[in-house]
Every structure is written in C-alpha cells, then in structure tokens.
Image 1 (cartoon, rainbow, N blue to C red):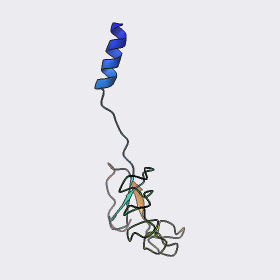
Image 2: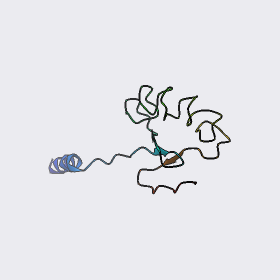
Image 3: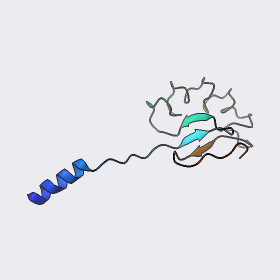
Image 4: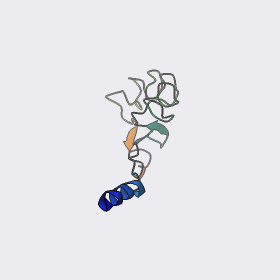
Length: 100
C-alpha cells in the first residue's frame, strides 16, 4: 500500500513535458504559424478560421492566391520548384539568416 501511494504521489508531482509544435518561418523570418494538428489552436496551419490556416489569410500557406500558398510563387510552400519557400523549425532551433 505504501508503494502504491508513493507511486501515485510521484506521478502527480512530476511535471508534464509537452512537445512544442514546429514553427514555420518565411525566408526573411516572417512567422507563418505552427505545424500543429490542433484545429483549435489560433496559430496552427490546420485551423481553417485562424490567421495562418485560413484559405483566405494573407500570411497563410493554405491560401492558393497568396505569396505562401500559391503553386506559382517562388516563396510558396506548395510550389515544388520554390527557391525560397518557408522552413519548419523546432521552437528551440536557432533562426537561419535571410537568404537561406
């Protein structure tokens, strides 16, 4: 019984470590949202009503007419021939200098 109580107390007192979603940055360091599967996260690219996930948002990689989502833009995430597309970085990863 003491062992069970000790395990329960240890589990309750152990901090929960949450993995942070990778962030998307444009070539000049523009923040373009997070790669989160949570459609309720306001900064997630999967939130259809959010700034970064909307099909109509200016800074969204899901906007087929915008700079970051057009299949013809050299800065697009959906253009397979893009030369300066957005990059996904871990939150603790250092930012790359402009022109990477």
